[in-house]
Length: 212
Image 1 (cartoon, rainbow, N blue to C red):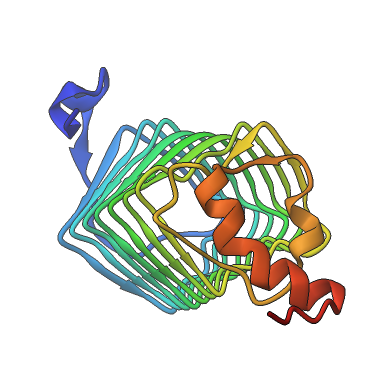
Image 2 (cartoon, rainbow, N blue to C red):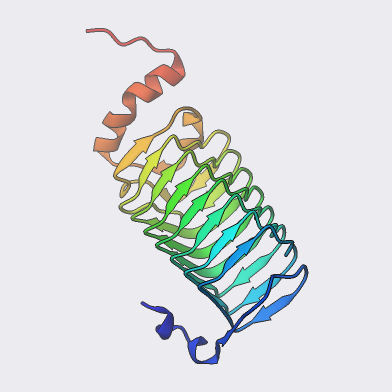
């Protein structure tokens, strides 16, 4: 699927200028822009597309993203605290140093992305797919994950401490490296091979010493 396949693609109009707080952006195309150090908290992005956009240190607290397309975008040190995402696609991008605790994501696809030091503590994720991604130092502490999957994704230094997992499928993950918070995996679905891989981590978490 591409941007051209989206039902609103023919309605998109180009955007220029900075983002503004509490603004409504409807069928707007943000293309090839560098947006930095702005205040756009509470903004609504409805049927919008972001392509080849760099967003640096933007304040997007409580912003809402509904039916949006983000492709080849870089989100660096952005604040997405308590933001809401629904029916969104995030493709071939980078999210680094992003604060998104308390965010709500529903029917979101994240594909071919690199997530580095992303804070999703206390977030609510429902029907979210992380496909062919690398998640490094991503914190799901205290989050609620329902129907979330990670096909083809590597999870490195990912934390689930205090999380609630329902119907969360980790079987497709290519790597599971969890420094702590193993109890948060309760309710997750893993493969037999992954269970063997996780066994030493579970043993350390439980204080069990294994000797031959």
